[in-house]
Amino acid sequence: MNRNWKRILVGCIAAAMVFAVPVAVFAREKTPVKPAPAAQSNLAEAAKSAILMDADSGTIIFEKNSHDRLPPASITKVMTLLLIMEALDEGKIKMTDKVSTSEYAASMGGSQIFLEPGEEMSVDEMIKGIALASGNDASVAMAEKLAGTEAEFVNQMNKRAQELGMKNTHFVNCNGLPVADHYSSAHDIAIMSKELLKHSEITKYTGMYQDYLRKSSAKPFWLVNTNKLVRFYSGADGLKTGFTTEAKFCLTATARRDNLRVIAVVMGEPNTKTRNAEVSQMFDYSFAQYMNHSIFKEGEKMGTVQVEKGNIPKLELTAKHSYSVLLKKGSPVKDIRYELRMEPLKAPVTINEPIGKLIVYQGDQVLTEFPVDSPASVERAGWWTLFKRTSANLFS
Image (cartoon, rainbow, N blue to C red; front, side):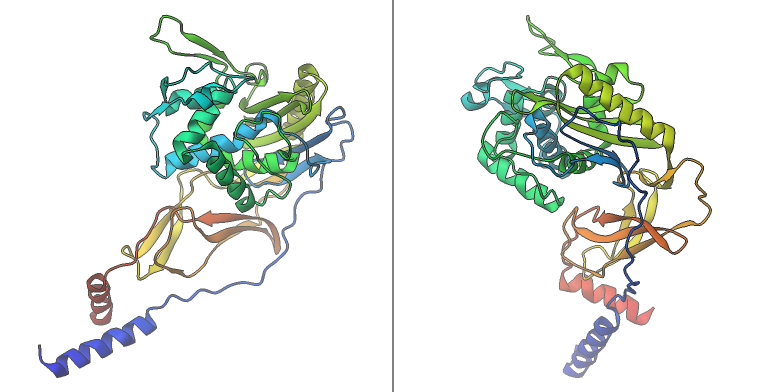
């Protein structure tokens, strides 16, 4: 190739790259309009703090002192489970991976599955031990598996809490055993519970009433879910109980009926009977008064987004979980619409990186907004890939 031809090609490539930059139109921001909190003064009367939330949209149905900082006890493990599920999604670990128990993990008191130093269980079994039996030892063993030390895992817990906007939460350990400066709020617990429920497979564990560990051993260990609502309340399938003398009886619970899933959190209840009764009443109120209008179901195609200079030119967006809006029963739905608003993307892009939002309107009013994350990582394309892509665009 002679020098003149090289100059012509370089000039064409430069011009094409200038005109290939994606253009995005950004509409004027509007303030989301959400239903007013329920005028139900008799909900969660005995609780120090409580909240009732739609699990899909995050709309708050009822709250009581929901931002008060209180000890969360074993509800802490919701964040531990969230980081485990995210690690599984990202391919850092697999359900079949073996997890070895350190002496430190085996030394945890309180609720436990009685792991011995050096004992190995699969990730699947450890999750079962955390979700059903609230195993403090299993929580620490998984923390060490993922981060090397519990202290580093706790740093990751606090970082994730900040990313989720949990302003009244600070973790000191991964299991909720009593310690100074370890606190959360009903509102923050609902936020991390909502995030955990995006991993729909978690309810396979949290909704199970009983199972066994060490099934093939001479002494199988019987697990019974500490959350009795999964057995006695229709539609309940999680999430996590908590109790210490300081925290009293706490629960973040979820139930689903038809297309509506709600999260109820109570903290500082006087006993388990009152705790379960008040959460059941919160569920009853939700299912009697509200309905869900679906925007996207899990697995449905949402659209595509172009990735400038990526090793793949575009990302296919599929709903990783259900997207819906909460409405009072009987509300009209014919004027509900949505807009997928994406940021211009330029490689590299990281999996789960925020890349835009789904905005749901009713008429001209914004009902709610959902963040949209990247479904995959996209590396920057090499110069030869960019050259071929640009040349194809130029001469097509």
